[in-house]
Image 1: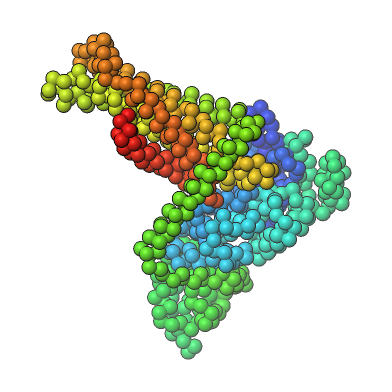
Image 2: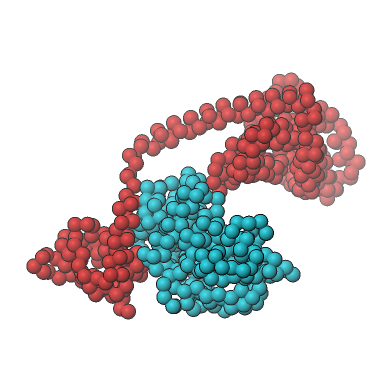
Length: 250
Length: 364
């Protein structure tokens, strides 16, 4: 981890019509960090993630990723930035009519001039890295939920992006698979220096992998805490933060 | 940072391949062919001392040399990337080639087997539907009236405008086309006979069937296919609810009841279109009406309507079966909808042929 800022968010607000999802959200993510966006269901975690990568329009404030403000960037700048970000969607979002290897090859085919054997080898390497080396020939319908998430990470890593964004990587997984995925994230972060932004509300994962986190709250319509997960668990005074980390009913 | 390059030199330890600069995806793409040529010279050592940065694509390029070629030099970061990718590739062996089968025979065998399977499952489906219908007859409260009415509205009422438009245009086209040869013999007055008999006996039911297959058969398949993919159908079975009773019977019954109405509308609209043409050719309404009354019988109309009910049953059943037997994945629903439309249209044309022979033999 170093002091280079990968993501800078200032007073970000998102509204759907008259409804404010969140406002005044500000934070910075440093290179090599595993940064967690946490909060209860419906607080806007995934919406914040989508706002960061430009899928949901920003109502106020600004966000800058790898030095580029997506809202201000022209088409070329936007494409250049998107090639340096890998996103794993909540459901994996693998293309159902392509084998896992073809899913991983797709961004390589689209954004590089690598010949086919190179793309195939690279896809195998990425799948091998996430423990799916022997599943390259399978279709998404033929694999489990945990495997789909890992394949989603492999596809997100295809272009060696410096920033990986994961939406609910542990959701719906058993504790063993979930722990395996947490270990994978940590391994990749530590060995490649990749920065991770992870949206989750799985307490075990947050404590296992998070270097720093912010917490969003539905009632407050914004951020109610920022810091290291274990410190927040032990010292937070905000009742919602305490309830969250202690798994108590609000 | 300089672009990635590849050179080679002879050394006491053998041929040395020297990489330098930035070894990223761009460099890997540019150097791939050069590396193929360099590997043909059986190098002994790869020197990475002058490599500034390496990503996974660069590592894959270097790793093409295999484990037998020693790697020397390179910063800790570069070597870490290389070793990580080497380990990842070892964890992902190259998939073995499946032995080639004699494709034409395999495909033919597969098609025959698939056809037989489809026929058997079609018979099983018909049997299940029949049993479900008998159960509902003895326990009418099982029948979901609300669902049935919804389908009547969706496949019937909402198809009226399309049916009327198509019918009118078909009547218009048939009348114009048939008037051309008949005019040579001064027999244009028989256009209503030709169009009327064609519509009432054949085309009305057939075209209404095509509308139903395209509009409703596909919708049934897509709706039930989505439910199957989302495991809603399994959920019904586990709750002890027969999907045949809840999902299939209301649709089939709606199909049977709606088709005669659509056929009647198609016939009326077609005759209207024909009348417009006849009037444009100078024949008054009374002449057209007289021809129709003289040459068309109630049997023509009833035969067409009876056929249409059979078409409705078959189209709805094929649509439901395609949906309920949908596979997995995003293509499953699309495949089910295609199967419903194609199967529905082929089935009604085939049935129409059978009815034509049957009616001819019975003198209807």
